[in-house]
Image (tube, rainbow, N blue to C red; front, side):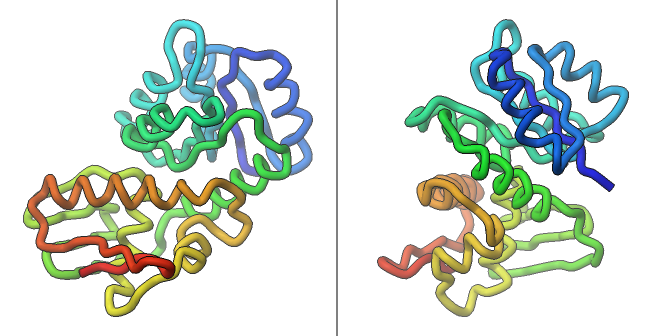
Length: 225
């Protein structure tokens, strides 16, 4: 069954690019506003969303927040589309709940690869599992993370990243392996993506007064300590 991709973009040229690029692999529908997008979501949920940041009226951040606040749509992966070099927008989108971002201008091969990678990683876990490390408890059945007795909110990528590090807490994980396991083989993007996610996870661990820290092994990767 073909996956459904919804794109919210006010630029007609980019909407045409999405349709032309994705129509061979996906069922793609484009919307120029949040209102039209949510009307479509109420009738048929997409498997993934491409969401521009700068939109007339309700911007991409407001649309993202609305998606992540609703039980029916909170697990739909969202790729934010932002201007090249606009790191503030990228970090804000990841904090709200976006799984990934792509900087404009982007290549069509990168776009398709990132969509496929995020679709693979967003598949629901079929086996109940609890992962523990020190004061971190990850319940995959509930898709919840408890740190030092407190539930913390994470994006899907942050959840997958912390789960992977906890599963392999006994050794250093290279950046290449982390990208392979969390983002997928065909991830094409800025290496800063991992650094931003690590930074946000560290903030959440500190805010929870956790005894666990994510340690940087210079020139290699990361591990829990």
